[in-house]
Image 1 (tube, rainbow, N blue to C red):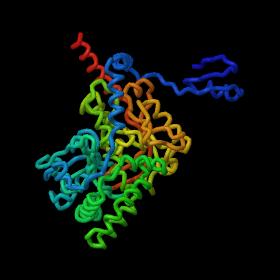
Image 2: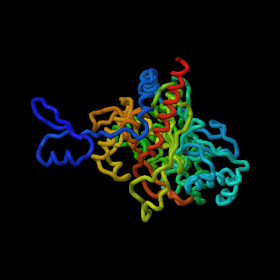
Image 3: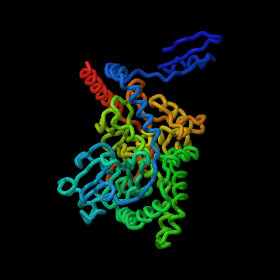
Image 4: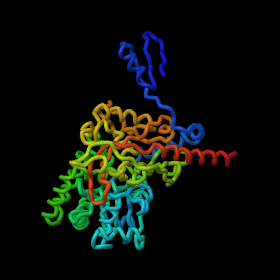
Length: 472
């Protein structure tokens, strides 16, 4: 479709099939390309209902205001059994609710390793029968306990958790400590060295961090995220600057503690050698912000995107804790060593909470180096951030993107805008091997399954009509 407008100069705006614009370019005719797409099929009636909802505009204004007002502070590090109330046999996982029967290879591997870590079995392989029987074990999403977990996201009672708090209202969120890359539990690996590393983290690293955080005082994670974006991180697959800033804040308390100097040295080396260490602070910081918008009737803002390796799910501010799910997709990206697409599991992890808050794949423009890790090009990264602005409600000026004239990170995914434009949120992510025990096989770019947004829109429309019926 093309339309011509006349002013002092004649130009052409082109939307739809690119061949028209290409032909005009070839003839040196000024042309503006408009990225227009029809609404998602079958959403017209629900869009009309939700867009005209008298509560929507004010509800979304309140939701944005609530999210942007949160200051996420690191206030503690503590075992999951203390801060989440997890009991023996209780396990949390990434993504929407999941049963063992539907669990993917990396999710099974992580659960099997966690069962051995907790002493429920001696050999992780023996945990398959335990979970299949369901006797003495239970599974629940991390989000159900105000927590988030990267990749498989498995949390068991003895694991230590970052504790973040909004000082304004005392709300808290949680995330486990980051193990590093490669063969790690969150990617479904459970070899002896994986379990020994986790035991060391519970025995040594967790208590050291707890003492350091308490001695240092609250650490402003929201401010660190803002600085990271100025320094080339996007806080999902690139966290180098964030990790170094966290290390800067904690190191004085660590080296002046009464702990064994060799333990302190080992902890500092581990954190300094793990560029993703800050990811597990960024994630609960984003969740703390987004949770502030939960329960606002009429709001169409997405407050969670999460994947369990089988399904991709979203939650929306105006529909309480209901999940809208579809099949998780396999990321398109780069693979490690001899691994290829056939080795990759579908998308997995709660780490898309970063994109939900406006960073990660939504702020790829601030971290052009990331394209060498997940594929694509620098122009792709810039275009992606601009495109995400088309499906969001606001910009977060605390998280400015220098290369785009310091525009704020696009924040507040709007279900109606996704359905109206057919533009899906862009996520950059690691890829786990599809078989239990393999670990990481690559990293890439992925989007949610398109059908989950019309499902959320339909639920919002039902609530809108119900309100109208009650008031009428």
